[in-house]
Image (cartoon, rainbow, N blue to C red; front, top):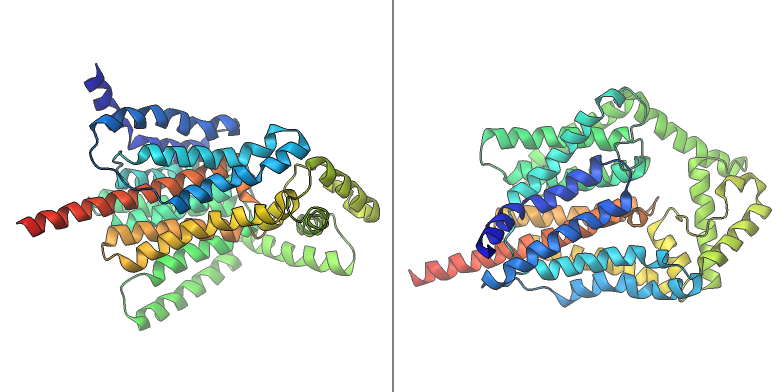
Length: 415
């Protein structure tokens, strides 16, 4: 019976990451169940594999720190606000590091993981064909959630195209996946996502092993295509013009009732909260009071409401307002520790598969960092869970490939 269970779990392992990237993007509602689903499914299957594995992938103590610190710095907010909601975000990373520790003796399939990212975009398009004519499309995870998850998966889909040479079918699969994920991210209408899209293609393009003049030529063509896209797509042009107009009217006419106006208001409120509680932030109740006071001073900002749990529309400012300096440190470590690891892997390793995977990990971190300038994507249940799980799976895959390379090298030395 145990052998049958092992055989079944071996087949299911490659599907676990696939389940996350597919479900997070295309499932309607139920954010918290989606966030918990993969962890609850994966842990028992991971654990039954441990007795039969004799190869253990190491886990860096820095990664453990980066994923445990968010829940630690949330404790003061939990105590001052009296609600478990303050611990929700940190709990996702705690579950992720537990999953990473359980993964240490498990072998995952890198190619199926990347293919799942491409498949998610295709599935999202297939399930929403009737909405493609709309100016903005919610693909199931909310406009912002769909945009952030889509751009994270876009980086993985680009890597699949670069390394998945099993057949012409899988290369074509990668191209189609990239196109579908581009449609998903652009059609959400989320303006903060566009720089992240350009960053992904720039990073992967600059990593190609081609001559400098070809890079310059291709970059020039790419720039022309981007400009042509902006000019030819009314929705993109409209969103850019709207952004410029909203910023101008905010400062010149005091018009706060706009998307950019709300963001600028929330940033001001975040700074007020930080002055009140620079070390540990302020409680939800105190932030609510400060929001009410701000609206009294600026009646045109009445649409902000007074929900102290709402986003500050900037990841760093959101941490400053609710968790203070220690919260900012936790967010920075969540960015910088994985980014440093992936960049070091890319620079030091010659294996093209490992380099491409490390590049995917680094670009995922940079994508969330850039999106965090105008939003707080890690507050979103699905986005935070997707980011955490992608980080630990890519980290584990790189460790796994490292062990396999060492085994092959040792065998070559013996022979």
